[in-house]
Length: 191
Image 1 (spheres, one colour):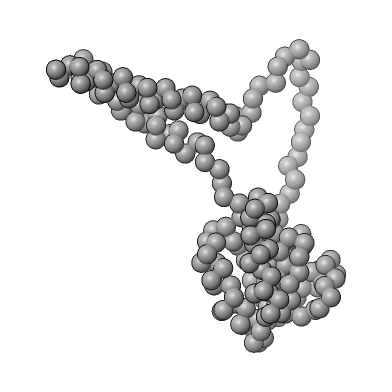
Image 2 (cartoon, rainbow, N blue to C red):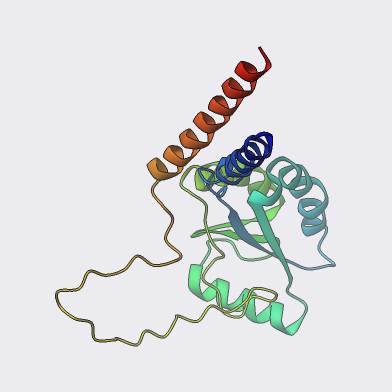
């Protein structure tokens, strides 16, 4: 009998551990592009003074891609940014976050923290829509091939769909009740 109790207890602990993380959601991420020149003192100031505290504060929730405009690929990104966003002031350092363009060693430190907070509150923001960002994989839309299905058959749930949160809590409740029942059974046997 004790083997059954032990195995049931192990099963309950495994269930609890498995379902503990199911209700958690991923943290939002803010992604931005910093266009800089290695010979620019203002760029150096932003990169060494303004950005490190923000990176430390937000950790994995803040990703800033640094693009050197003196390299051919970086120059092409800069030209695309100027054409696409048409900023009032042009030059480096230039930081693009969402649809916002910040230029200079005053504007970037002054406005970036509030923009990060705003985008995090909105669920994050992806890389700016700039062509050929170095180090950012090019996303291609998936090819969809329509497949005929019988009209009266229900559509099966996709294996990637998550169970509703209520199902997770229900399973968690069962695991907790199992543990409580096992604990009660063990204490009654010891008396």
